[in-house]
Length: 295
Image (cartoon, rainbow, N blue to C red; front, side):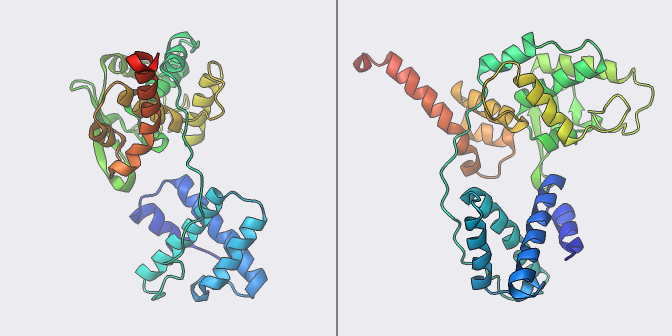
């Protein structure tokens, strides 16, 4: 089954990242294979909830986690909402579906020591690539931006004179994040190295490779893994963990939750409150150390 119109809708109207769209389409294609085998049809729009429920049961029987199953069902639900929007169907068969229960996953961020060790002790080559890779780590931690937001930064988004950077987030929503002085200096150093490249094909983008092409998501992911594998034993090492560390460390230092929400580009406080778990843990530690009755 081909989902070209839906793909265009996700990319251009919903403004989803390419890797998110790819995951949605993969989920729909595997669902299509299932219904062809089980119900001898490839027309998703005519299915009932009971038929979809058979698919969910099959996913459970495959041993997939509830979190993974919920994600797959969410992909299908988004497709049904699209079919409603385009008036292909009147009723979404998943409208009353309740997600499977999942355990709340508290991500453990990098510590301040781990981040400073990467920035101060990990050896980056003294050339264009080394300067760029160090700036990638520094910018993630200093701004809390998402991986997709970082790779899509334009030169015109950086305002060193005013010490701010413009980020284009989800749903094409712009936000401005202040830059601390050390990061502005690092950006200036990187730009000097960048200007020494002979040919830059993707000239409007801030981050490029040595051949002059825009960096891709997977390369940025590898930079974070390679750097933090040298200093951290944590299982989860990713750009998102640096975003998580940015928010958690700000909150630990007393930053206002609403301010952190704006910096992260969240639309609601509920999305930001996930970052308060570790702040509460830190608060408990301070309380237990300092309170007279705790001794």
